[in-house]
Image (cartoon, rainbow, N blue to C red; front, top):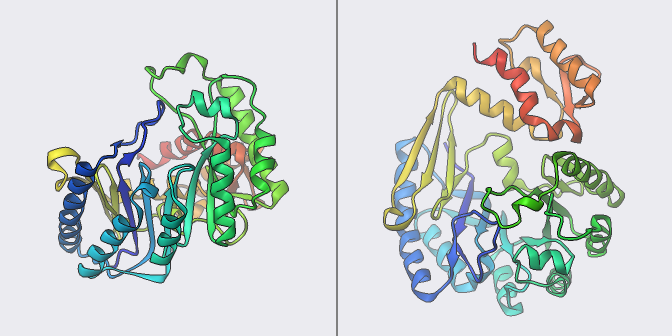
Length: 372
């Protein structure tokens, strides 16, 4: 069995934002050298582990480098990765969707051009907001002008890119979200991701977080407003023009196998009736990984939950053949009456944006049948 997708975690930033809980640290030369050594070891260990699970990784359909701030890695770092992958038998071709996360203000033009030369054909830009005061309160170190310069460069290169927006932000000041969307739409991105801010109670602005009703209304309004620009929801947090969905992220939601490299990165290997999730450790044990084995029933749960994240027709009678159709019809009818789904067939549904907001609750409606 071949793994066609790979995620690589680059764990360094210029600055650590106050809300982010991803594994990362401030970059320096020694840390980068150590990371390269760890990565070389992990590539070998990863291939060995795949073999023990009857998998291989010859040619990638998608490669995603996230972080951290991968744009700081530059040409030399990403060349290092590609060379190590190639020498281990893993090929990245011109047909590979090759995504690198790019933070405004954390790049140089010549470096971006070099990445494109190396085969990067998609960037994910961490905009978050187009309000200077909001950016400062979020502890972001880029400016709105940095965002404009980044998107202008990518447009001049005629390259595919996505823009990240953050919703549910603390009440720093009144934010005109629609105005921000209008400004971003002027650059004509093909893809937008939105994330509702979730933080621990020790977050410095925790007391200013909006209530659930505000966040729900903001999310629904955001989803609806993007349609004005031909950008449609295809997953809970992701929107695109038709044909520009993230091929890499779709691998997760379709429950396909995705390998992983880098500290704290998680891979998922799917077999016919079971799966293995593995996660790389950090620090001195960075060449070790923890393993979680999923049996047939647990894998079934995950496949259903992930499928429900996508805005596509779901025939629940096929996904859940063990549940009596009459019981499924009752559940689906309840969802329909609440506005959580659309569909004419009693058991074939497409979740609405309102349904995505209460996804965990909808899955619980099915889980009561699944757990028996």
